[in-house]
Length: 536
Image (cartoon, rainbow, N blue to C red; front, side, top):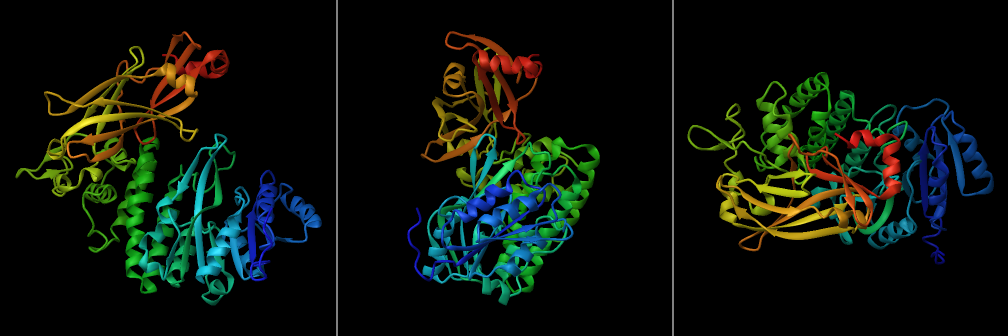
């Protein structure tokens, strides 16, 4: 039940829903918008020349719902920008927000955004978006630090981190504000159009309100027959489109005199976009890697001294320095570890002739002199994880890092197994870290397979919380070692389940994880087609 809205709130919002050939999901999106209550004056559904019956489905819904208007485009636009612009032109309410056909608005989203917009007189009001992995249902918040608590930002320059939230869909906009400033999406086929739209929004210097409420559910369907633009990254053209969007956003803010925000766009590119694609480089073929490497070096060459003035040992900055120093792809496994979250700088730890820490003997010009000075919480600590399924024993090795680890004094490690798809399902055990003869620190602990299987089958991620002498802590993931006898699937008898199947593996970021299955039902599922991948 929605409370009776005040006259100022009733019918205050137009929700623009866009879709193309998405008959399986568009009705859910529309219903989630209509279900927001009387604050929604209308839902403008823009069908981008679908051929799967989406338009007819929307017309049938509109026949029974007076608040739903359907606008059909005669020719497919090839992107999200044109249908959103069409919906914006048709919007009749004082406020507008956007919704994709395969996503939903959670209950109360519009009320939360509208109340904050009215109370603070904000032209733009943003809330928390969660990425929901389907079919598992696992949810990951998008830029949660921005939406940890209510806030009012007089102008975006006062909160540069706003540029990291490039989504257009988790925000409520004053319609007159967008029209007065001519703020629109790029038309036609323009991947990552949100980056350009939000840059235009921030360039217009709106008053911004932020709320901690969940206001948008972004459905991630990795197994869908047609992947979304953000998921379909297998071709280098996707990367070219992303760098073009980032370059365009930077230029928009620079032209508006927002130098600080423009620089923040480039910092975000290094810390988010670059790291994400570097993690995936080892999965690509040689032709992709070479094309990606050449294009990225050309893009990074556009950065000026001010863009490179940050911490040279920060992961994104260090990735950029290695790329610029090497004309050819190199050190991809090590770069993948550096790009991981949390970042890991794996051995070797080289020094220049004068003893200065550097990336490698082959790239001594990429120096790391500031790295040992970083606080423990920011060090890219490297922990190797060795797991032999036969013994069920997890061995950990924390590497020294130019003396910084020894000075901090490692004490112990909290070993945490976290279920990937079931929030809050965690198993922890603390083990001491002991110095080894080679200068590293080691620990060993059994993998509690029986307990993991009892709590829940599926994927379990390993996380470590390292504690140091002064009480400082650092949460890290563990690099999965490979080699004879390592990461081999194994079936072991179980007194409670009959059989436990465990498959250790390295994630895309190189971290150790487990897949656990137990009992006759899981065994039958695997035996019907997947067991071959579990057995040596």
